[in-house]
Amino acid sequence: MWLPQINERKMGAQELVQSIEKSILDQTLAVGERLPPQRILAYKLGVNPTTVSRAYRRAAEKGLVGGQIGRGTYVLAQSNVALFTRCLSQQQHGVIDLSINKLECDPSLLAINQAINHANLFLAEGIYYEYMGKSLIERYQLAISQWLEHSRHISFSPEHILALPSCQYAIHFIFSHQLKRGDVVIVEQYTAPGIITAAKQHGLRLFSCKCDEQGLLPQALDSILKQTNSRTLITVPSNQSPMGTTQSQQRRKQLANIIIQHNLLVIEEDIYGMFANPAPLSKYAPEHCLLLSGFSKCLSGGHKASFIASKHPLMAKLAERVIETIWLVSASAASHIITAIENQYLDKAIAHVASSNADKNAILGKILGVTLNLNSPHHWIASSAEFIQQAASAGVILAHSDHFGVDNKSKQVHYRIGVNGISIEKVKQAAIILAGIKV
Image 1: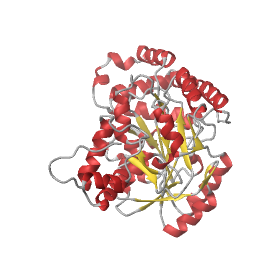
Image 2: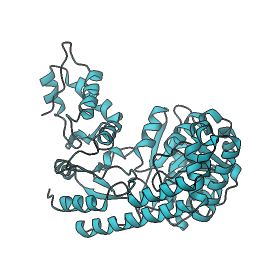
Image 3: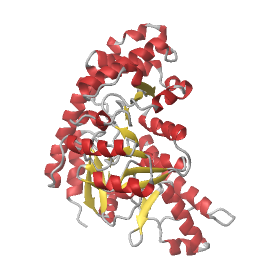
């Protein structure tokens, strides 16, 4: 049983949270491992049970641990500390991490990026090593505009494009300049941990909207907007993380009607949109949506160059914050994206990753005996906390649904499998291990 290192003075709730975080970082506490029951730990440490209860609650708010009454408290795979620890120890023998959608630069993708470097005319110019200048900004905006037109089937003029370093940064950026503490934001029933964390950091209140196999339910969205008077929605319509659902064109049109009716500001994260067929939700409500996307899931995670595309009036206000946007995008990253688009290398990268994911999903589904969407980079499978813990003990790390739930009222446990950042051989090996676990 794990116990924190006890200092000479009495341990309080904050010290206990720090000890949990440190133990995850140095891997004394492994992903999926149960923490001691609160009363037992309180007895061992000689503290009041409410101190431990408060510490566990704070650790859960930081995304370090999860759990519900009767199931215990355990270390989450998706906590920032756990993710960072595993990124530092990627070569850990025998561990297969299916919890992270981090792009794997396999030989084919490496060759595509090398070809981009060879074709990148900016490499021979001083501008490659400078801040983004006016000419490069305009070239970047034009390239993104053209790519959205032919690949995502949505039209934006170059002036409707704003460069930012990442989608996660864009969410924080929009929160800080458009919302104030206490504002209500509507999200999907399950949503990305980064969105939940950003909302907490900015003091925003999240309300979840019911979903089905296509994501947001129009009637449920209309109802919750009337209940909360919220004017902000964050949605991931394509290959939604963590569930892998994708809204149909008809569903997007239905949602667009509600968005326009309620005059909503919609933050649409489209980071996996290139792996889905429907045009972004923004196409049907272009003056209400901020479309966030980039290429870290299909081309290169190392080139920090993403964008917001929108006809919303807010864009003029955001574009004024040059030091917080354009100056944070390196000219080298922008030129890489420009060259990839202009020479059709981006399309080749997307096709390669999509084909690779389809092959992995076919193997995964066959071994596990489940039907999977071959186009999705991740999957949401019903299970139990015990299964996830046993998988971690067997060397397969899965993402627990507790870390994606906004209200955590659901009694059903799910785990997420991500195939985007792992080789086909490891996917097959992990599937065999998972298929052999009995709970």
